[in-house]
Amino acid sequence: MDKEKEMLKAIFETIEEGIYVIDQNYTIEYMNSQMVELFGEGTGKKCHRLLNDSDTLCPWCRAPEVFRGNRLHWELYVPKADKTFALTELPLKNPDGSMSKLCIFRDITERKQREAKLAASEERYQNLFEHVGVGVYISSKEGRFLDANQAFIQMMGYDSKEELLNIDITRDLYVRPSDRRKFQEMIERDGRVVEYEVEFKRKDGTPITVLLTSHVRYDHHGNVLGYEGITVDLTERYMMEKKLREARDFMNKIIHSSPSPIMAADLKGNIFIWNRAAEETLGYPASETIGKMHITKIYPEGLAYRIMKMIRSPEHGGVGLLRSHPMLYVRQDGKVIDGTLSAAMIYDDDGNEVATVGSFVDMTDRIEMERTLRSTQEQLLQSEKLAAMGRLTSQIAHELNNPLFGIMNTLELLKSEIPPENKRRKLLDMSLSETVRLAEMLRKMLSFSKPDQEEKSQVNINTIIDELLMLHDKQLRENSIKIKSELADNLPEIYASRNQLRQVFLNMISNARDAMPEGGTLSFKTRHQNDHVFIEISDTGQGIDQENINKIFDSFFTTKDTVKGVGLGLSVCYGFIRDHGGDIKVRSSAGEGTTFTIFLPVSETPAENRENELDKTAP
Ligand code: ADP
Image 1 (cartoon, protein in one colour):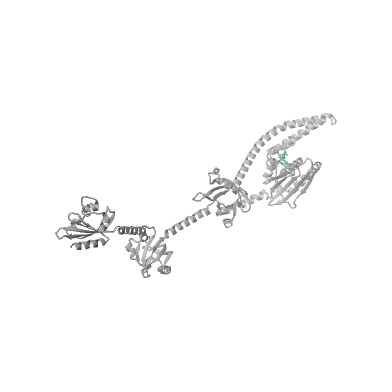
Image 2 (tube, helix red, strand yellow):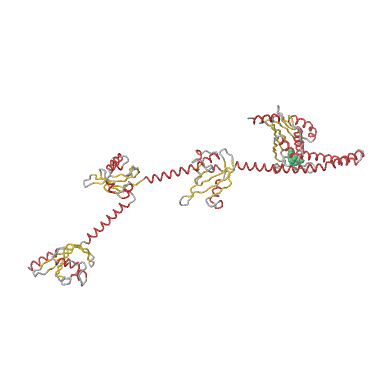
């Protein structure tokens, strides 16, 4: 018997598991060396002292079950050893009828850890499969889904995985079933397909464009089982691109149909936006401007550089802005026009300058309008001034006229009483000639304020000029003035006041004489052009200073001393010519002479005019 026991013990020693035996009082009767190695020597001790360092039964103890005759096989984690064991517990009946328990401890800690790791990684993969943002699927070669994640189910519009697993891929998924065959050919040839763009249809039939990346699944013998892969829904991206394209087209339309000229250029000055209004205003067609022309070309030299400086400075509406600034532009035909420019710098997301955009306004019409308005206002003021002067002048002239004639008469009387050889007679003559001059001046003043209501008739300008030059020929020669006249043949007659025109030309002659004290040339030229008769009167005299050129037609403007000039001549001439529907222009440079150009319309008689007008309004 002992021999048997000894053999059994020897066998137990060869076993890798820990083995121990307890009696019904939980006292350890036997431990093999593996058990001693695990928990230390404990034969004779209570088993709970050995396994749990405790005087009471272990909380997990199932010995009573065993003593009742049950065999147990279970797993237990023992904190003291920090190990998990597979326990096998067997009841042993002693020859005396008492019970013992044999317990086998197999260390399964490492296996448990491996299992736990595997479970965790499987869970991670399952999580990834379910929650990844793209559709993931596994399909069979025959065309059934074996598995698919939630994203794919949703992408295809199915309510559940079961529903999806039931469909026929070739028929129900592909918009064009031939695409599935193409896909299979590619994947079976190369083992994989990368970013294959194809159209699928959702459960409700709506097509979506997807990007398919897939590889083959083989069985152990290398036969194709099916495919697994991912799908990305491109529909949204396409929609987004479409929306972006539409937004860009819309922006382009706004820019191109804007009535304000709009342009944009990169930092090198290459124009990339040039709308229709810009084409019209500056004349450069977009086809020759965008990508071809440099922005500096639309500005006078150096201005583009100054504009960039202004945009970058904080002084014109803030850094990066230029608010409605007066500007000059060079049109395609080379003409420089006035305008305004509003511009802004365009920055990228990192705040770097990338381009400038500008909108401009052509001010030519407005400036011209303002000029006309100003000149009309000036003319109005001038005529009001003239009217007031006229009234004053006529009053003064009237008041002076009578006493002056009284003085003249008295002087004439005195003259008759003093013999010509008398010394005082010369003084008297001088007084008399000055009084005559005064009377002449008064006459001029009166004719200015109350222009003679002259009869108008058909007159020939050439004839009037000829007569006047003949009359003044001698006097001009005495002043060393040469006369040149180039009068056009067949000059049409005009309807005018002969007297007033004489007065105008006379005034021009006398001004020319004053301007050429040392002599010179006085020329008269006439020509017929555009329904007007042009009369050019030039002298080679001292000319008119630039600062005075705009004033010479003003009443009372004179550069002559008080004896010679009153400054009414040209203003009276101007009034006469305007009355005739004509105009006077002057060109002069100081020291080189002066040219007055008078032009008068060639018109029919007033009677004919009236008839024509009646014709026009006739129903
Ligand atoms: P007045 O002869 O009395 O000065 P006008 O109205 O005829 O007045 O002329 C105004 C001014 O215009 C003159 O004082 C003179 O300065 C200038 N002017 C007119 N004609 C000529 C001319 N042919 N050459 C130079 N200056 C002239």
